[in-house]
Image 1 (cartoon, rainbow, N blue to C red):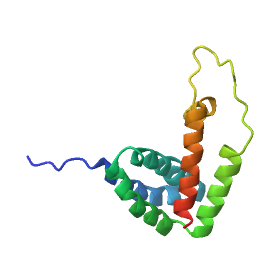
Image 2 (image 1 turned 135 degrees about the vertical axis):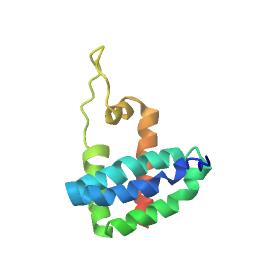
Image 3 (image 1 turned 90 degrees about the vertical axis):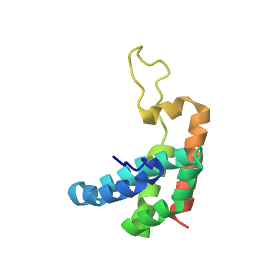
Image 4 (image 1 turned 90 degrees about the horizontal axis):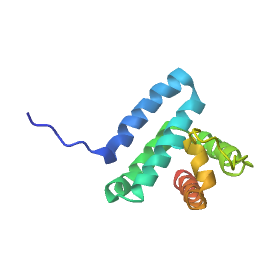
Length: 130
């Protein structure tokens, strides 16, 4: 049996296809959260470490720009900036021993991760709005 190797750096193609169904079933906000807020950020994180992912970034960005209007992208990024990156955060400095920190909270408590996430957000904005 001849199986082609899995090309993880091409996963964005399936994610973009799924976004169309998400938008139709759940709406614009969920589609933007899924593709830009989750998948693009994760993809760029991988691209920082893997050249195969990095070479796919322009095609991924172009497909996002095809799926959403420039205004939809701008509005979403502005919302993300206000609610996640510039919003005052209430960090619990003494979490419960068994409390599992959510992905969004972990970077708030680690300045290096926080700086990386902010830089990644700036890169997302630059790539999508150029």
